[in-house]
Image (cartoon, rainbow over all chains, first blue to last red):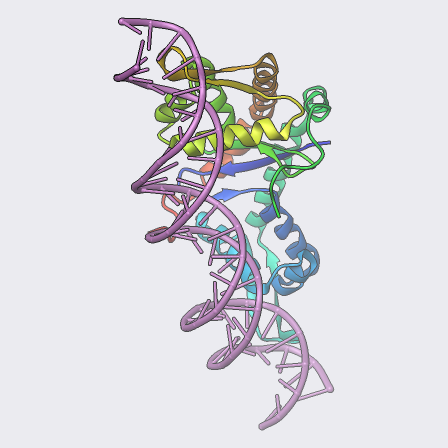
Length: 118
Length: 118
DNA sequence: CCTCGCTATGTTATCTTAGACATAGCGGAT
DNA sequence: ATCCGCTATGTCTAAGATAACATAGCGAGG
């Protein structure tokens, strides 16, 4: 069955989609950027850049990180980060509601394998 | 105000988003791929590739094109193409419904200009 | 005061993507 | 028979994004 990918595109060009939302969840659950990156199978640098782009996109940060300290440091969602994540999840939920009929109809006519892609 | 970008992602990896949907609308309205491409400010080749990828993604074509003939030929949506477009529009409408409150809240905290981007 | 693991950032190589250009073929209308 | 404009496809280049590697700094805890 096809999935709906919902992204929020801001005037500035910044955007938040399922990937960044999931990354925020992992940061919240693991307490560190690097652990979140490992869980998602991406490099620390990539995770850091994604988080930095989100922090830059808003007037206040979504993730607060501290280097050094016990265990080398860590990161956590700010209250605002929690709020953004919650709002994204709600928007996503609203988007995928009541689309089943159309998605099933399209799925039944979609090919299993795409042409191309080595 | 931020916009919602809704894409349908199929198992095969093929996807349909607002760009392809708009392209289909232009093909329907202009009766040709090249006119649709001009209207969207893209090259004919790009438009053709996008349409070809859609035709390949399903078990039947969405756009039927004929080379040669009066005016050089033309293209039109098949009945199935009309159906896919209609279903996409309905899914999109459903997705953007009832998200205003959250989008406004996010917009009020978003920066006007993104950091980076030459 | 040293270790440990995480944050933070730079550099370079690679891979993918997008764009620019070029060209062949088609067939109704004139 | 020719023209016109659109379909269809190929090649090459520029640019942008991704990945790989490298390294500096931080601070609580042992």
